[in-house]
Length: 222
Image (cartoon, rainbow, N blue to C red; front, side, top):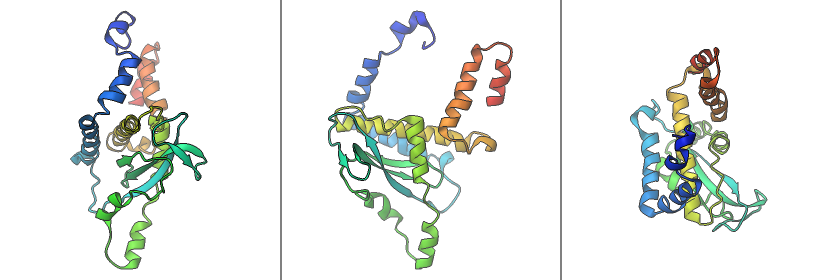
């Protein structure tokens, strides 16, 4: 349908229709909670669980600049901009287990207890420090989410609608990350999601319109 010029006007939802679906329908409490459960089920699926008895949680915050009068946006001195100050939690494989949109002027640690308390460690100080030192890659995953899924594009007026946009970006990120670590060959599992977009999907998808060499390009990409 997307490729058919004759059917495009009658079959494909207009941008305004998609916008209403995103900012009104998905913003309803029942549907928003459904999106949250979808993301949880995605990263907790048996095939996606890391084969380890120990789970490392990596928590970090990130600023999402806004350009308007979005609800609960505020100036943040650290980021030197009017923004939202989102909170993210990842596991050691880069899966985003949770994301929370927060007002721009909250402290970086605000709300972290809901993520941290079930993973509080007991044992010697040395053992706790050794375990803690295995984390520290959240900034890398956040950067990938920003670049590949544009989850900082929070231009809606209402706070809830922007929560929906952030969550949709997280779900898209997790789908890409699970594809990368569960499906792709080892040789390209270290590629960023942006590299996969540009070098695998765009090259492979665009190759169908190319003569002669297109089949070879697609075979190599897949």
